[in-house]
Amino acid sequence: MKAVPARELIKNFLTFVRPALEEYGEWEEVSSLVRETMQRGTGATRQREVYKRTGRLEDVVDLILQETAKGIA
Image (cartoon, rainbow, N blue to C red):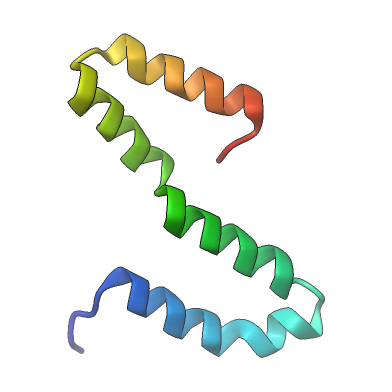
C-alpha cells in the first residue's frame, strides 16, 4: 500500500461505490454530502480553527451549538 491524499482516496472510493449508490437512488445525496464536507471541512476541523483563532473553548462550544441548531454535521 502507498499513502495517498485523502481527497484522492475519497474520489476513488466514490467512483468505486457509485454504481451501487445509483442503483439504490442514493448517489445524489451521498455525493452532495461528501462535496459539502470536502468544501467546509469536518466538524472537528472547524472546531480546531475556532480554537486556534480565539483560544477559547467557550467559542468552540458556541460553534457546536450553532451548527447543531442549524442541522450542520
